[in-house]
Length: 381
Image (cartoon, rainbow, N blue to C red; front, top):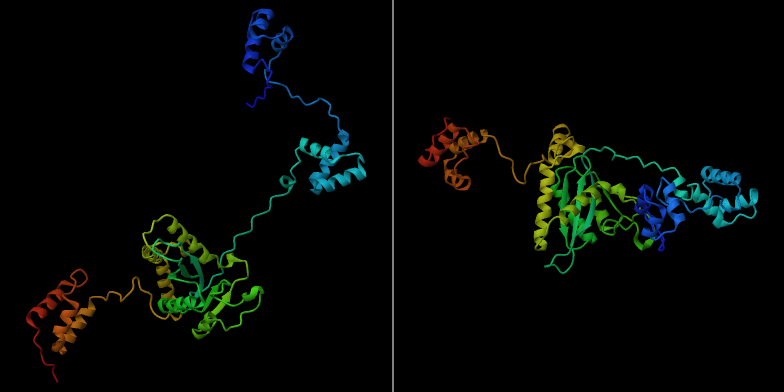
């Protein structure tokens, strides 16, 4: 309860309640609380012990009650600002109306805040990215914090495939066109997908579209544009001041920002290794709701199974060659049987076969060959 008492007040709501509930004579209560008899009798007659409103029962306003109703209705229906409404009121209702008086009138009727009367704007509907086959990549760069062992900050170049959410990153010491081109070369080499379209913003490292402060079409002589042409990649640019167009890579940059906030790095190398580990985790182990609870690599393999023409090569779970089935050992034994001179070299390179992925009979056969030297049997002519 909000109670406002002036500095000379001698009673509080608690004292007033005690006076009303007391059966003692009024003179005794007046002497005890240092009050007048009129004050004691007043609180004995009341049932509510808070102060009444000090607002006058009849306000001295220029506008009549009917004119106030009209002014409030105009405010609600036309949503007129105070100065515009004042002009209308002076023209048609009361020429003597003042700006402060009209403002008090609107506040009394609860329409003083014009923004509260305006209908709430409906939020813009969410627009999902247009579905594309693998090969449409978003590219951007993110500023990285400067570490203690660094003399200047570094930059993280990020590329993400729209269909599979596969991500590739590299850290560069600057954000020049040469660094962007070097990143694109590394991306083209590492990505198993045939890159068909590449979307970037209008940064100087990607285009000369906004050089000089005047918007114009890219000249095509920029180093990054020339590399895209050499790699047969369509380079697309976002509209100026519309980062939401490149929102897919921007959201991944938000993930990188969370990693930077929640980790402490001893050096620039430590930061780089942490970011690379996170990207590997993202590509291989983090399911995406947009991919129907698949990881980016699982989605890439599913696309490869149905659309192999969109890929340069088959996607692998890890860098390097995939593990071959046990049948490859049988082929190896046949090869060694034909060329026994390769036995010592092969055994020195591959060592004994792994029993957990090779049938036991093949393991025993291979072990016997390595131990006995596997005498060569001439092939029948």
